[in-house]
Image (cartoon, rainbow, N blue to C red; front, side):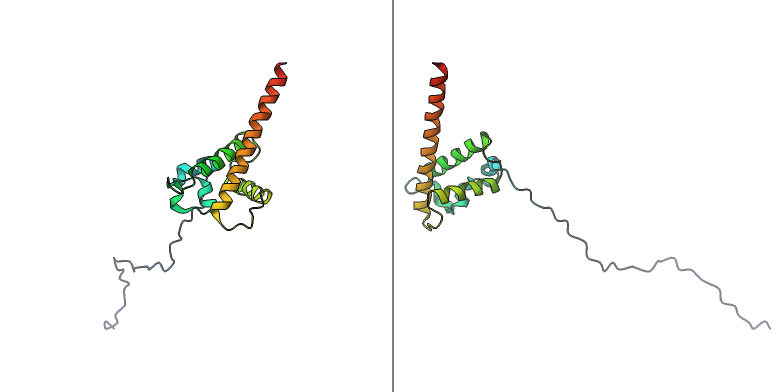
Length: 142
């Protein structure tokens, strides 16, 4: 009877390796849209350059659109500062679409023609606003 052998449990000191088959989840950060007034500092060029698809030659002194872009940007900034439109790119896009419709430039494909007419229209509106403000000031003082 001494021939009976009992098995004893032997614990191993190494733990089995567990493989993680799940892929790590990518952290997605939604990009917050930049306000219109900060668009130039964020993208190194004004918003109207992208809107009218002027490319990289918009600052060219011989055939660029520096004056037109400056006029459009200052008009839109005045609209935002006066509270007529919100300080967002979407609100500015809607305002530009409305101006394209007003000036009948919605279907115009040539950026040269479109930006020239829209800039002149905005310059006209800004000049009229200055005149109206001058009249209000003149009549208020008399």
